Length: 539
Image 1 (cartoon, rainbow, N blue to C red):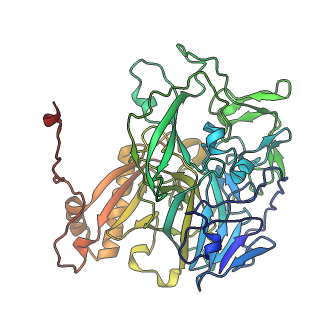
Image 2 (tube, rainbow, N blue to C red):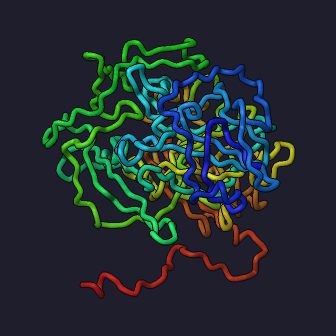
Image 3 (cartoon, helix red, strand yellow):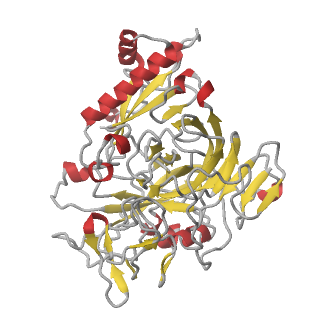
């Protein structure tokens, strides 16, 4: 049974969906809601579950598929939350354990090129809409001041999930969201002020934020995704920098003090930002009914082109292998306040591990009833470290299977789980952070988490979690684990840009299995497939 959230229409690329519903592979679509008014979702009393096993919406449209329940959750202004998570949010949908769900996600960087990534896509238009009455998604960031950037679809209430349980999320498929007006998909990479290059420095000494727009290239015959290519670059908000060659003044919007209706301890209910003061205590004044945003101060703004800095010389310079993955998949934390979507923690979030793609299974410790799963910040490609601050940020649709593992019968690998665990066919991946549980470890978590991360602290955290995991999973002593780690485990820098830095440990399963066949990894230290052509042969 395919359960569709009310007001939504989908074309799916899954083999057991009827032919009438399979227009093309996974370009999940919604009806045009860009002109509809946004109805605020009331804040429920925390602890009272929704109607489980059915949609939170008032009606549904069913398709017979198989015995498996496949739910669908569209991305639009009523089904996303922007830049934060909160246990008090009303779920966008409720599903039973073991259900499959198709989830639309929208990139928070779509505003970098309105024509390519927003215009003509009704669901994305709805999310980004900012008219004279203000933004349709009014609360952006954990305090509504832009302190948190990710567009997260959800929350998904998983029936039967309770604190102490573990939520298992299998990623069955990921596919780029196709804009129906162009039949293309684009992504954006922002080399931003929080990227490592701002710490390392620039050759000419001029700090600058540069956005690169990428196109996802498909085979014209099969429609299969081939790779991504850079289309053009532009500088963002750099008119204030000495030597800038542009008079670009940044995006402008109709004046809005922003307001919301969150029932957290930090806000009156309802709340408003009548002083026009945003992240980092920046005030954006209202002048003649308009606000001029002179930099990356608030998420979801749309860059008007041309900026005067567009540079198309990058075309044809290189191509990028595609590796679709979910940058931010998060459960609600057991807090009575909103949680910033940027720093990852034990409950998941902005892990930005390129391995969290198709075929991966994630395990998260559950802290609140229903788990309250949300996801977004999807990527076409990213290298370890997410060096310049972002990946190729892309609107992508996910096919997931979500299962509750009860606390009373947890398998050894996820007993006492205190971090997001990844499993695939060959490996376990442990995710360590500078502060594994920063909302509880830090007295003022949101004012200090961006200041205290170091690779030393992060490596210590990753090692401690890896040691404990291997002792518990494989029945090893501490001495045995130490030598096993140095012999077979690879540590890598996941990201150094999300406030709470990440280091992951890749643990192969083969050394601890009964498999007697020779181990043949694709890549391992000290060995690579010899190149047919080397630098020497090309000189």
